[in-house]
Structure formats: C-alpha cells, structure tokens
Length: 146
Image (tube, rainbow, N blue to C red):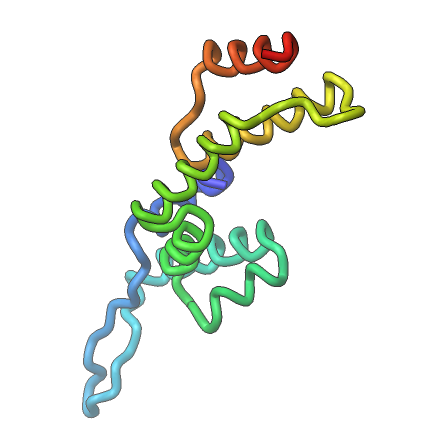
C-alpha cells in the first residue's frame, strides 16, 4: 500500500497530515479555507480514495467520518500492526506457531510449504522476517520427521 501511495505521489499527505489552513474572512469571525491549501486538500482526497479502494467494506467502517488520510492510515496501523505491546504479543504467538509447525496428516509437501510461507509473511508484516537459514532448517526438520 505504501508503494501504491508513493507511485501516486500521495504518501506526503500520510506522512504529514493534511490540515486545512484558515484565515479570518473580512467582516466576520467565520473561517475560510486558504486557497494555498487547495492542492494538499486534493492530495488528501486522492489518498482517502486510494485507501478506501484498497480495503474491504468492513474495514472501511473503521474510518467512521474521518476526513484525513493520515488518520485513516493510523487506524489501519493500529488495527493490523497495533502498538509495540500488541506487536510483541503477535510475534510471540507466531514464534510458537513456527516452533510447533509440522506437516499435517495427508498434507502434501506443497501445501505444507505454503503454510510455512504464510507464517513467514506474517512475520514480515510485523517487521520481523525469519532468516532463510531458519526457514530451511525448519523445512528439513519437518521433512525428516525430527
């Protein structure tokens, strides 16, 4: 998703949240959005659209009435990566899943390998990829029944 937003030149509104600039209008206290922020507003709206298009309807409900792409992104990070404590808990669970990994009864090698790669992908998503040596070692132990 980050790459997609970068390709569209939209990542800047995720890194630095769009906030409308206001100036007092002449003659009253009402605030009027400054014309200079129009381009950032357009980028923010494009980023919001890109995020909505990338998620399911059930995930989109998490955003509520958010009108800021950065807030939407932060919602996704909290939901899927969580804070440091949640991340550590997820990694601990994956460590257990990896250590207890074995071939299922009647499972072919390709399906077993795909399950192991799914675990690796979960580690990658949390920013903690397993080394190739660790994966190969696990495959060999599982295949040899050790």
